[in-house]
Image 1 (tube, rainbow, N blue to C red):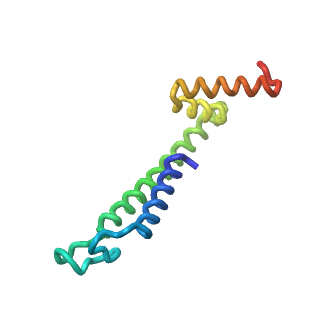
Image 2: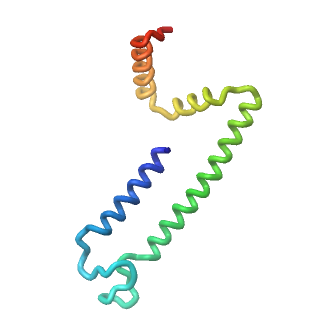
Image 3: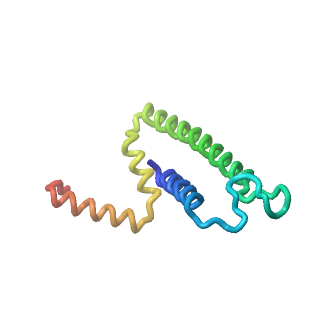
Length: 119
């Protein structure tokens, strides 16, 4: 599961946990309209929450479309004779910081030597 999805899921869980258990500010009456303050003012702005949800849904739709596009590019590369597993590794390595990539390669070399897979 991609890191961004895990982080988003955890943020959502934390947000709802905080809403449920936190000490609510004076005048908090849950989602909806307050019986105090300006007429029609919402304590937790339901419209803003709805906006966030709609934005997330739109982004998830875009991500699904992009995932399909990426899948098509890999299929095209495979039909041209390229090894997609290796291509995926290269894409993953190119995303990494140079220092992190070098550290990972050094650890891989140590582990390979430890199990007798010296090159």
